Image 1 (tube, rainbow, N blue to C red):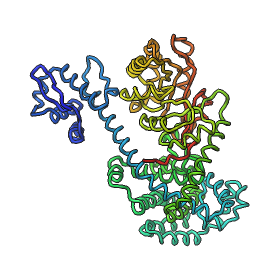
Image 2: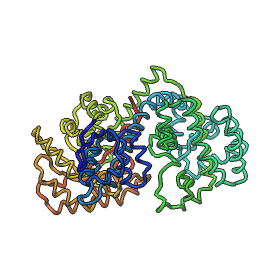
Image 3: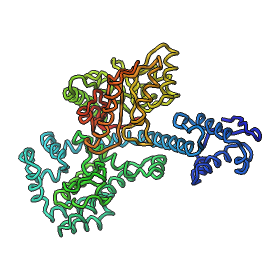
Image 4: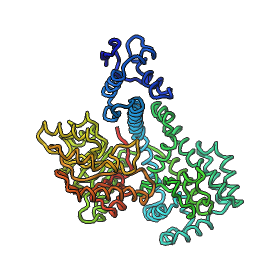
Length: 567
């Protein structure tokens, strides 16, 4: 995309599209001004030196920066302050844009990769269930929810019927008796028959020796990376990701995220719970090191020092043995089995929807967060009682909206870009993520053209995270007053995400902040503003959100199950 750039010196022809080469070369510059100059040097047709750029007026350079922003789709992120140098603001906005693009590319690669893998994994999980038998599986499932994941081999060594009603302390006593040091060694020897265990003989034998000497911290510290390593080797050897996926993992340091995603998927299928034992993210500044948590993040970062217990080692050991069984039975599903999995998934959606609807207090609306979900899954949720569908991405929403025949209200709950507004106003009944006056004005203008009034919620950046969208808490009133004068949108409340947390309770301070703003704005009685809805809380935090005053919750995984990405 070429343009003529008029300056006080002369006119230049400039390629406005910033390619990878130009960005990567510019990105090595330490100063923001040098970053911008480097881009211009590479995108001007012909030659231009930095000495020449220094002679060009600030307003000409600034005008070019806006042209770059618009042509590359980050004009909604680029908001330099008048009268101040724009270079830092430009570089930050472009980096955020590139990071978002990289994230979308990553997600696209994951979608392609995961489809084939999930089909094979379902085969292994069916084998696990069939090997145990339905009655035994129900008991094993209860134990898994307490952190005990048992392979068929280990489960056969204990009296499961009796164990199903046992306390956690009694379960530990039973497994401690059955899993003697010699029995543990035998189990480990059986692992070495698998390719991705065989190269780990030395370290695993050392781990078991440390355990037998009661050096529990050392044994646990050695076993955690082996658990992750086995899953990674399995992914590389048994289900090779295409080259793009491999490259993205390297670029974005996504190896651990990929491994954790696989573990989360496996565990969710067994426990029907999205929380992964041992991998809950903890906020180190408030981490409680007195409860002997087995938490990978806290242990490997040196925050936890009280994790050395026999229970923690045996839980981790049993989990690895369970993974050994699952990974060794990964296979393709037959057509009949695939149909059975689909029927079970639809049945689970119905059960999940009805269960959560029964839990919700009167007056609390449930938005089914349908990111990546098929039209069939969405329709099943609506038939089960869902009245509002939430979508994050406009392209996905377009496809779903055309395909879903069941009636529902549609809310947009993702980051809204200006170039998507025309589609959004024709699909959605509410936009929950208005995060700036500029976006509101554009939304108002487009709505005016088609003669509709769009209900909106103002998104609050309750965690004050610079990398995230949303209005800063201290600016909410000012922003609302500016938006309230617009004729074609109607403010009906607030929405917040809050920082990404591990435990539900950690969201509470951010929900409190948003509720405080909600109440204050309500008392002001601003014309054209009705504080009717407070949208807070997702699958892992909706209960705390409701306690803090939310009357809209956005739930996805707890309704639909772990996301299985599709093409």
